[in-house]
Length: 152
Image (cartoon, rainbow, N blue to C red; front, side):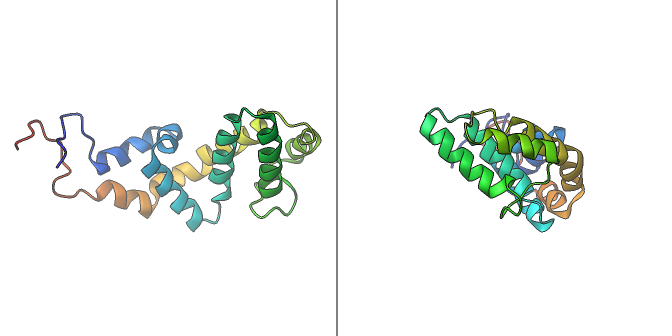
């Protein structure tokens, strides 16, 4: 059994930390999974999927992969009637449509900012009030408490 030091965060403490800001939530795999589950229940998981796709896309170095990934993101999230169409304004969609012929790693930045803002102002506060989040915070299991000495 691994030794847990005084800096060990129980799952409940970790879940409480997600309420600090959305970046904390998105940077934590368990937090991201819980948020995705919540968004699925609200039929809006395309927002976080788009945001994650953009984060991955921005790390792309190969010109060929930039083009292919940009087309996939465009067809999956941006084009009208896309399978996971995100809710962005016409001017942002139009700008992306014009730039998709010669995409750069920044071609989705404006849409990503809009979707992040939408999630931060709308979905994230509702997530913090949801049963999914409350259950995670309240679920303290025996053995997951902070331990100051490994033999306790």
